[in-house]
Image 1 (spheres, one colour):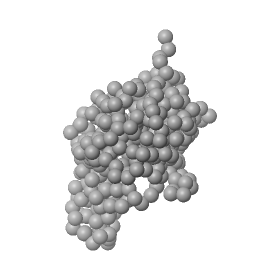
Image 2 (image 1 turned 90 degrees about the vertical axis):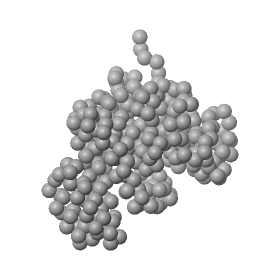
Image 3 (image 1 turned 120 degrees about the vertical axis):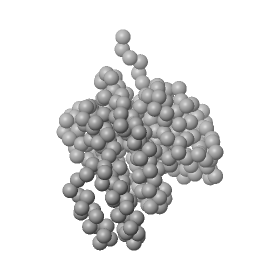
Image 4 (image 1 turned 90 degrees about the horizontal axis):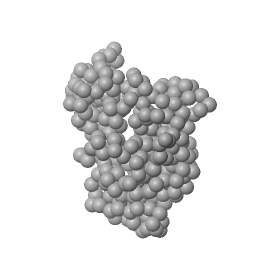
Length: 311
């Protein structure tokens, strides 16, 4: 007996997204594989987000909550979902028409996939293509060659650690079974930065087979209004803190995932140190670098120290 076709619940967290959410909703509604349901969780917006979503009537489920951050909004959407697979979309981004169909096809063809990802495109505020995510990662380029004309492939074994390290895909191209999402506790509510990375690392740590669609299936809109770009010091500080929260469970993770987490944490310390050095906060920068040296030591440590000293 063949497995039932996957039912995708699309969860869209929204905060003051009145100007952009129509494009996101249109892209979710115009899929070649129809979504089982589309759920918008309004995270305490003060603009016309509610009115913009209301225009879609019963084609979209609208939920509202007091502002609690993207993790809480996504988690509430999953709690309310009735599909067996969950996908996510930010309110200022959009899907390409085959986003759901490509993953539905892989789920039918490849047994035992723990979750699926895909490439996505970076575009500027005018919609111009910057580059695709998969082309920027060594693993991604290898997978494109491996996939060949099929356009899809599977990450297994040690390569899962490489995916953790390089992360050429993220939540907008993630398809995960609802039961798996709930078993992992969802996105960490205490994090507003790097919460998606933390969840993805946890997901990789319990997974054996990851389905990959190599063609871009969504758009990440690059702009300067987000928290990461508007407050880089906070973003980099919070990234270090977020990755540290994984320390206890990483002791039990597969070796490849544990090592990848160490590399990510060390890189986060390095980025923070460079930013502090440019601000003239050399002592703090050096302290961070010294702390990072215990994670995946390498020849680059000495060069980083000299770079910080020279600002």
